[in-house]
Image (cartoon, rainbow, N blue to C red; front, side, top):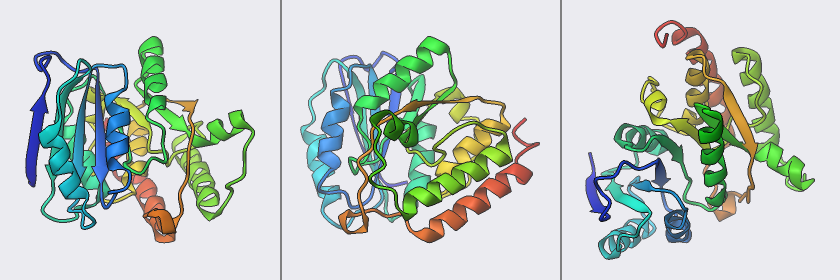
Length: 257
Protein backbone atom coordinates (compact mmCIF):
# COMPACT_ATOMS: atom_id res chain seq x y z
CA UNK A 1 0.00 0.00 0.00
CA UNK A 2 1.20 3.50 -0.80
CA UNK A 3 1.28 6.60 1.35
CA UNK A 4 -2.20 7.91 2.22
CA UNK A 5 -3.34 11.43 3.04
CA UNK A 6 -6.86 11.91 4.42
CA UNK A 7 -8.97 14.95 5.24
CA UNK A 8 -12.45 14.89 6.78
CA UNK A 9 -15.19 17.52 6.82
CA UNK A 10 -17.22 18.40 9.88
CA UNK A 11 -19.80 15.93 8.56
CA UNK A 12 -17.41 12.98 8.76
CA UNK A 13 -19.95 11.00 10.81
CA UNK A 14 -22.42 11.22 7.92
CA UNK A 15 -22.48 8.46 5.34
CA UNK A 16 -21.75 9.88 1.90
CA UNK A 17 -24.27 9.27 -0.85
CA UNK A 18 -21.54 8.90 -3.46
CA UNK A 19 -17.93 7.74 -3.66
CA UNK A 20 -15.92 9.12 -6.57
CA UNK A 21 -12.74 7.21 -7.40
CA UNK A 22 -10.14 9.20 -9.35
CA UNK A 23 -7.25 7.12 -10.74
CA UNK A 24 -4.35 9.36 -11.76
CA UNK A 25 -1.16 8.93 -13.74
CA UNK A 26 0.73 11.93 -15.15
CA UNK A 27 -2.22 14.33 -15.30
CA UNK A 28 -0.53 17.46 -13.97
CA UNK A 29 -2.34 19.78 -16.38
CA UNK A 30 -5.88 18.68 -15.53
CA UNK A 31 -6.06 16.88 -12.18
CA UNK A 32 -6.70 19.94 -10.01
CA UNK A 33 -9.39 21.20 -12.38
CA UNK A 34 -11.11 17.83 -12.15
CA UNK A 35 -10.97 17.89 -8.35
CA UNK A 36 -12.44 21.38 -8.21
CA UNK A 37 -15.29 20.29 -10.48
CA UNK A 38 -15.95 17.27 -8.28
CA UNK A 39 -15.92 19.36 -5.11
CA UNK A 40 -18.71 21.51 -6.56
CA UNK A 41 -21.07 18.62 -7.24
CA UNK A 42 -24.23 19.12 -5.13
CA UNK A 43 -24.19 15.78 -3.33
CA UNK A 44 -22.78 14.48 -0.04
CA UNK A 45 -19.69 12.62 -1.23
CA UNK A 46 -16.24 11.26 -0.63
CA UNK A 47 -13.44 11.57 -3.18
CA UNK A 48 -10.67 8.98 -3.34
CA UNK A 49 -7.71 9.93 -5.52
CA UNK A 50 -5.16 7.22 -6.30
CA UNK A 51 -1.93 8.36 -7.92
CA UNK A 52 0.03 5.64 -9.71
CA UNK A 53 3.48 7.04 -9.02
CA UNK A 54 3.22 9.93 -11.48
CA UNK A 55 6.50 11.33 -12.78
CA UNK A 56 5.35 14.67 -14.25
CA UNK A 57 4.76 16.61 -11.02
CA UNK A 58 1.20 15.35 -10.44
CA UNK A 59 2.15 13.78 -7.12
CA UNK A 60 3.62 17.03 -5.78
CA UNK A 61 0.53 18.96 -6.88
CA UNK A 62 -1.73 16.50 -5.09
CA UNK A 63 0.35 16.58 -1.90
CA UNK A 64 0.08 20.36 -1.81
CA UNK A 65 -3.62 20.27 -2.63
CA UNK A 66 -4.61 17.83 0.09
CA UNK A 67 -2.56 19.65 2.72
CA UNK A 68 -4.31 22.91 1.89
CA UNK A 69 -7.79 21.49 1.38
CA UNK A 70 -10.49 23.02 3.54
CA UNK A 71 -13.66 20.98 4.13
CA UNK A 72 -16.96 22.18 2.70
CA UNK A 73 -20.57 21.19 3.30
CA UNK A 74 -20.70 18.63 0.51
CA UNK A 75 -17.46 16.65 0.76
CA UNK A 76 -17.41 14.27 3.71
CA UNK A 77 -13.97 12.90 3.03
CA UNK A 78 -11.00 13.46 0.73
CA UNK A 79 -8.38 10.74 0.52
CA UNK A 80 -5.29 10.74 -1.69
CA UNK A 81 -3.29 7.52 -2.01
CA UNK A 82 0.23 7.62 -3.47
CA UNK A 83 1.18 4.23 -4.86
CA UNK A 84 4.87 3.23 -4.62
CA UNK A 85 4.89 2.23 -8.31
CA UNK A 86 2.60 2.35 -11.33
CA UNK A 87 0.12 -0.39 -10.44
CA UNK A 88 -2.15 0.48 -13.40
CA UNK A 89 -5.63 1.95 -13.57
CA UNK A 90 -7.52 -1.26 -12.84
CA UNK A 91 -5.69 -1.74 -9.55
CA UNK A 92 -6.56 1.83 -8.55
CA UNK A 93 -10.24 1.35 -9.33
CA UNK A 94 -10.39 -1.89 -7.35
CA UNK A 95 -8.76 -0.19 -4.36
CA UNK A 96 -11.24 2.68 -4.61
CA UNK A 97 -14.20 0.30 -4.68
CA UNK A 98 -12.83 -1.54 -1.66
CA UNK A 99 -12.49 1.72 0.27
CA UNK A 100 -15.85 3.16 -0.84
CA UNK A 101 -18.17 4.30 1.95
CA UNK A 102 -20.81 5.84 -0.30
CA UNK A 103 -24.10 4.23 -1.26
CA UNK A 104 -23.02 4.52 -4.89
CA UNK A 105 -19.59 4.49 -6.52
CA UNK A 106 -18.31 5.87 -9.82
CA UNK A 107 -14.92 6.40 -11.47
CA UNK A 108 -13.81 9.81 -12.75
CA UNK A 109 -10.80 9.99 -15.06
CA UNK A 110 -8.44 12.88 -14.32
CA UNK A 111 -8.09 14.10 -17.91
CA UNK A 112 -11.29 16.16 -18.39
CA UNK A 113 -12.59 13.98 -21.23
CA UNK A 114 -15.72 13.44 -19.11
CA UNK A 115 -17.79 16.26 -17.61
CA UNK A 116 -18.28 15.67 -13.84
CA UNK A 117 -21.63 17.45 -13.97
CA UNK A 118 -23.06 14.41 -15.76
CA UNK A 119 -22.48 12.35 -12.61
CA UNK A 120 -25.42 14.01 -10.87
CA UNK A 121 -27.79 13.01 -13.67
CA UNK A 122 -26.66 9.40 -13.42
CA UNK A 123 -27.05 9.41 -9.64
CA UNK A 124 -30.50 11.01 -9.73
CA UNK A 125 -31.67 8.47 -12.29
CA UNK A 126 -30.34 5.58 -10.19
CA UNK A 127 -32.15 6.83 -7.10
CA UNK A 128 -35.38 7.60 -8.94
CA UNK A 129 -35.57 4.24 -10.75
CA UNK A 130 -33.80 2.11 -8.10
CA UNK A 131 -31.32 1.04 -10.78
CA UNK A 132 -28.27 -0.91 -9.63
CA UNK A 133 -26.04 0.26 -12.50
CA UNK A 134 -26.37 3.38 -14.63
CA UNK A 135 -23.75 3.96 -17.33
CA UNK A 136 -23.04 7.19 -19.17
CA UNK A 137 -23.05 6.61 -22.93
CA UNK A 138 -20.92 8.76 -25.21
CA UNK A 139 -22.73 7.28 -28.20
CA UNK A 140 -26.13 8.39 -26.94
CA UNK A 141 -24.63 11.75 -26.08
CA UNK A 142 -23.47 12.31 -29.64
CA UNK A 143 -26.80 11.20 -31.05
CA UNK A 144 -28.45 13.79 -28.85
CA UNK A 145 -26.04 16.45 -30.10
CA UNK A 146 -26.23 15.25 -33.71
CA UNK A 147 -22.43 15.16 -33.81
CA UNK A 148 -20.23 12.47 -35.35
CA UNK A 149 -17.18 14.62 -36.00
CA UNK A 150 -14.64 12.51 -34.15
CA UNK A 151 -15.27 9.10 -35.70
CA UNK A 152 -11.85 7.41 -35.59
CA UNK A 153 -10.11 4.13 -34.86
CA UNK A 154 -10.89 4.42 -31.14
CA UNK A 155 -14.58 4.88 -31.88
CA UNK A 156 -14.68 1.98 -34.34
CA UNK A 157 -12.97 -0.24 -31.77
CA UNK A 158 -15.41 0.78 -29.02
CA UNK A 159 -18.39 0.02 -31.23
CA UNK A 160 -17.07 -3.42 -32.17
CA UNK A 161 -16.23 -4.27 -28.56
CA UNK A 162 -19.67 -3.10 -27.44
CA UNK A 163 -21.35 -5.24 -30.10
CA UNK A 164 -19.31 -8.26 -29.00
CA UNK A 165 -20.22 -7.61 -25.36
CA UNK A 166 -23.93 -7.37 -26.14
CA UNK A 167 -23.87 -10.63 -28.09
CA UNK A 168 -21.91 -12.42 -25.38
CA UNK A 169 -23.88 -11.17 -22.39
CA UNK A 170 -27.34 -10.50 -23.80
CA UNK A 171 -27.07 -6.81 -23.01
CA UNK A 172 -28.58 -3.82 -24.79
CA UNK A 173 -26.07 -1.03 -24.35
CA UNK A 174 -24.20 1.31 -26.68
CA UNK A 175 -20.94 2.09 -24.84
CA UNK A 176 -19.40 -0.72 -22.81
CA UNK A 177 -16.05 1.07 -22.49
CA UNK A 178 -17.37 4.23 -20.85
CA UNK A 179 -15.58 5.46 -17.74
CA UNK A 180 -18.87 6.54 -16.17
CA UNK A 181 -20.21 3.35 -14.60
CA UNK A 182 -22.32 4.33 -11.60
CA UNK A 183 -23.04 1.32 -9.39
CA UNK A 184 -24.49 0.60 -6.01
CA UNK A 185 -21.46 0.09 -3.81
CA UNK A 186 -22.73 -3.08 -2.18
CA UNK A 187 -23.01 -4.70 -5.61
CA UNK A 188 -19.66 -3.33 -6.79
CA UNK A 189 -18.00 -4.92 -3.75
CA UNK A 190 -19.44 -8.31 -4.74
CA UNK A 191 -17.54 -8.29 -8.03
CA UNK A 192 -14.48 -10.55 -8.17
CA UNK A 193 -12.34 -8.28 -10.28
CA UNK A 194 -8.93 -9.46 -11.43
CA UNK A 195 -7.91 -7.01 -14.14
CA UNK A 196 -5.12 -4.53 -13.46
CA UNK A 197 -5.30 -2.33 -16.54
CA UNK A 198 -7.85 -0.61 -18.78
CA UNK A 199 -9.55 -3.96 -19.42
CA UNK A 200 -11.25 -3.55 -16.04
CA UNK A 201 -13.74 -1.33 -17.89
CA UNK A 202 -14.96 -4.51 -19.58
CA UNK A 203 -14.68 -6.86 -16.63
CA UNK A 204 -17.00 -4.71 -14.51
CA UNK A 205 -20.01 -4.79 -16.88
CA UNK A 206 -19.33 -8.46 -17.67
CA UNK A 207 -19.57 -9.44 -14.02
CA UNK A 208 -22.57 -7.18 -13.47
CA UNK A 209 -24.40 -9.04 -16.21
CA UNK A 210 -23.39 -12.39 -14.71
CA UNK A 211 -25.00 -11.21 -11.48
CA UNK A 212 -28.19 -10.52 -13.42
CA UNK A 213 -27.87 -6.74 -13.19
CA UNK A 214 -29.63 -4.70 -15.87
CA UNK A 215 -27.37 -1.91 -17.12
CA UNK A 216 -29.20 1.35 -17.81
CA UNK A 217 -27.67 4.06 -20.01
CA UNK A 218 -28.01 7.84 -20.15
CA UNK A 219 -26.39 10.19 -22.69
CA UNK A 220 -23.31 12.09 -21.52
CA UNK A 221 -20.97 14.65 -23.05
CA UNK A 222 -17.43 13.73 -24.08
CA UNK A 223 -14.36 15.74 -25.05
CA UNK A 224 -11.90 13.22 -26.51
CA UNK A 225 -8.18 13.77 -26.61
CA UNK A 226 -5.49 12.17 -28.71
CA UNK A 227 -2.17 10.51 -27.92
CA UNK A 228 -0.35 13.83 -28.16
CA UNK A 229 -2.63 15.24 -25.46
CA UNK A 230 -1.91 12.29 -23.19
CA UNK A 231 -4.40 9.57 -24.14
CA UNK A 232 -3.05 6.29 -22.80
CA UNK A 233 -5.19 3.70 -24.60
CA UNK A 234 -3.48 1.72 -27.35
CA UNK A 235 -4.81 -0.78 -29.95
CA UNK A 236 -3.57 -3.79 -27.96
CA UNK A 237 -5.85 -2.77 -25.10
CA UNK A 238 -8.69 -3.90 -27.35
CA UNK A 239 -7.18 -7.40 -27.50
CA UNK A 240 -7.04 -7.49 -23.71
CA UNK A 241 -10.68 -6.37 -23.59
CA UNK A 242 -11.74 -9.21 -25.87
CA UNK A 243 -9.87 -11.70 -23.71
CA UNK A 244 -11.39 -10.49 -20.45
CA UNK A 245 -14.93 -10.55 -21.86
CA UNK A 246 -14.49 -14.14 -23.02
CA UNK A 247 -12.72 -15.13 -19.82
CA UNK A 248 -15.45 -13.73 -17.58
CA UNK A 249 -18.19 -15.36 -19.62
CA UNK A 250 -16.82 -18.84 -19.15
CA UNK A 251 -14.75 -18.49 -15.96
CA UNK A 252 -17.03 -16.50 -13.67
CA UNK A 253 -20.52 -17.51 -14.78
CA UNK A 254 -20.93 -19.94 -11.86
CA UNK A 255 -18.71 -18.44 -9.17
CA UNK A 256 -20.58 -15.12 -9.08
CA UNK A 257 -24.01 -16.63 -8.57
